[in-house]
Image 1 (cartoon, rainbow, N blue to C red):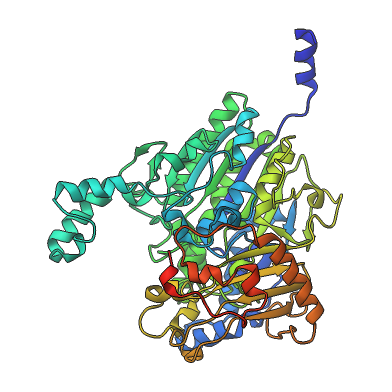
Image 2: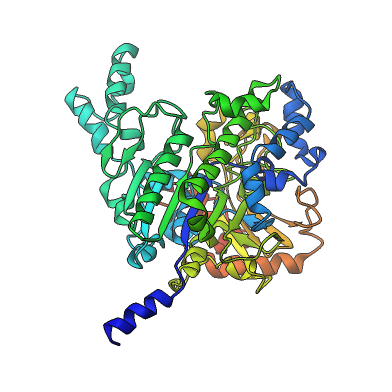
Length: 556
């Protein structure tokens, strides 16, 4: 082809869309206006309602529901012009594995990731993040906000310890004032938000990184943020606004260079600590006798404003050709600090494999590319986000992905893209209100004694296997609970109140076989306890009462 013909073909080709993913941390469907607008207050998980009564929550359930419905007016408007997925699942019940699933379009269990702590000793294989394909196709790519999919740079911490002549484990033995001084030195290296170079976002297909590799980042005065490979020191600015400003600047630079952009804006909101007050312009409109309610929905309103600010900053022409995806990473850790409506009708919370831990909001909007005003009940997942971006960009996904493009659903060309989904990992009460049932100390101190679990759902039914709950772990299960299977009809029973396993043994066997066929190739975790993981092996979980649990001595 002659040069003139080649240039003419480029000019005639459709302009590739920009891609913006806004990912919220620990954000329940009940907190998201496009979902809560159709909810009723009395559908909330009865166990969570009892928890609120026991703790004398000074509001009715109607109040937080009303605040939720008006906290995100901009997102609500975009949702009504796009597609809202009402049966969306996370790729995990915890932040780090869930993000690994989003980045790769693959079940994180395929990489041996079952728990947040599995990134303490490992990362994702180079070349596994799908954003690299966009980068190679000419996209400007940015990772802004929470990364949390790599090992922290422990050399920074060890350097401070060595300076003071300390070995591992000796810092905690020092007098409090001396220990505090040394811990301050460690913080000032940027250790908490650091990532080793092997796992750095710039090695996985991102052109720019401004963020933190940690489970949380304080809303103000964060000392965890890095820009590319440089530690930024203390950042006093409210981080929802700070991260959004960086995302806008990157997008505008790409537009000026006439390049499409792909930006992941992974906000700290709505992870704890939540107590710092949201700026007044977000806080004041949600007046309540409860500071927790007013502040929580103020922080959510700041996210809504961030989306609107990004949209206005790039202008209507660019926004019209921007694939915008909004999602949560996993279920909300509902408690007093993370208030109702939480996870809506679903039982449980973050860290559990009840629906409350794995159902998430998922919304797509692309004026130039998809149908307007749909609500889809297709079985979808956050695994589908990057395959969707690839298809929108006209790129083929690699073989073997678990994720599927959402575009056939969003363009009304299909009503189904998969037959089933499966997830597995730690199944703990420690990340929400049910942690109060833990015996022998705070829930976090016994978190790793929790059982594992796996779920398989084909949309109508969900089968869950839970490993053995050891005696003495929970107040309501002081004698322990043997490993077992449960089956629920999700459409008739979203609160998981009626176990159908005995009534529908054929369904149980069918879903068990799906899990057994895939999970047999999943590798062991690098950090999570091997005895907990071993209970999930297909040969063990198929007949949980035939073999005793693995001894803790083989735990990693």
